[in-house]
Amino acid sequence: MRLLVTAALLVCASATPLAAQILPSVFLEELTWTEVRDAIDSGTTTIIIPTAGTEQNGPHMVLGKHKFIINHASAMIARELGNALVAPVVTYVPEGDVNNPTRGHMSKAGTITLPEEYYMKLLEYAARSLEVHGFTDIVMIGDSGGNQNGMEQVANMLNEEWGAGGARVHFVGDYYGNNGFREWLIEQGETPETIGGHAGISDTSQLLAVDPRHIRTDKLAPRGGGPDSGVSGDPTRASVERGVMGIQFKVDAALNQIRALMGNQ
Image 1 (cartoon, rainbow, N blue to C red):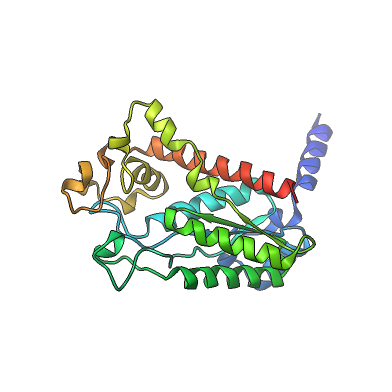
Image 2 (cartoon, rainbow, N blue to C red):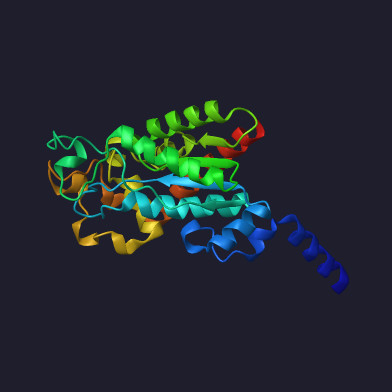
């Protein structure tokens, strides 16, 4: 029996890419260049470029909400794929117009915006850099609505340039736009009004699950406590349990789309 167990463990180990067994982290910025080189040589040729943002999230939630959530989710996705790493999160994204800061998130202190064309150049050269070093599947995932169009355009442009025989850029929009979490909240008895569209139940629950230190619980209030709070919905109805479910919905949606895209190459 002991021999059978040992043999089974060896089989499991051999099915895991070598790099996944020895790397101390899935985060690119936590590895040395030689560790990255060896990981690529051993078959870790998928890398995720997560995009987030630096934007107002009401009085109760920190400006870096998207970064903390997408970093956590990207690590889950990379570990599940088994042959993937995670690039540094892109936190400078389109958030509005500096020449008209009274609209949208730019009306609130701390929000940082980047024009679409510069955001796209940032993504393009991040992908080009990673392709040069041997990553063959570059996955772009964004945790915010304003990030999606730029990622899709860059993916299409680079795929056309590199052709069928080169590296591929995979835009994974289902993570954000087709994950089923909102529908699940409605099944739990919530309404579009209580869920809201920004800094409400969904966002607050996910950040509670990832790192509750970034939620000011004494500031939680329906609609943020006032008409100019920057909050839509009722974040007082958020919970860690709902956040765990929400992140899992997003991770599962991303994994399904990534596998479908790579299977169609």
